[in-house]
Image: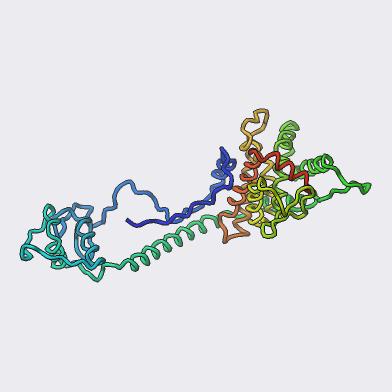
Length: 370
């Protein structure tokens, strides 16, 4: 039986108890192929010429499964003939090559069975060598993957940005750049302390949300809950985007932690940051990723029962996710899974905040210019 290669979808670096984007991703009709996977069959394959009834094997008289090496044979005789040719096996008969071959006696004399295969017309030249079989299997697999990829490309071509989505991206991107201005200096020229930097950053987050459509329709209580739950995660996202995995440094650098001798306790955090950074998000994706992080509250914090308008938040999340999907489909047509990679990395960042690394993350954030 042929082995089928498989290419599993990219796994999250950290595995949270509940995938935050699973429901929303399904709602925007994600189409991601799994290499080599074919539709499972509920019944064995039957050739069209056997639909009207079974035929007998020309070698042993057992039920035939189809034409094998130019003859109608059963699976047993097909395999026996193939192994004999591939392994160059030589048999001898103890009864002057006159043995009766049927489905009960076919295993008694291999020599007479092989001779009957030849006399029935089975073609030795059609048996592939080990290398030929590997090449054929590879060709079949490549063709299958090519067809699947073309199918997926045909599907995702329907994901086009609407004018409303283009306008949303343009507005969000411009306002993200103008809102999150890095500054650690007070107007009077003195440096901001830790608390002042965090407060200034939260004010930037509040200002950024004004450019998310319908966010202003949420009650003040819902908006406050979102800010309280998500500002830390947004800070992690910004920090990850400023990490250079090649240089293994942050830009701007951490002030209170020696990056060159960073303790091993930070390794898992840095690994997540590096995975985010390697995607190389462009300005539009960065703005959309920040919006999605804010709007993921209902999925990621299901225990927040005080949220009043969960439906509106989910609608905004779904619309923003569809915008990211359509944008990446148009902009990065050669990477059809790019938008889902971004969602996985956002989920990894969230998993960090819910892990035992939270105290370390707070130490890193306060050592960095938000």
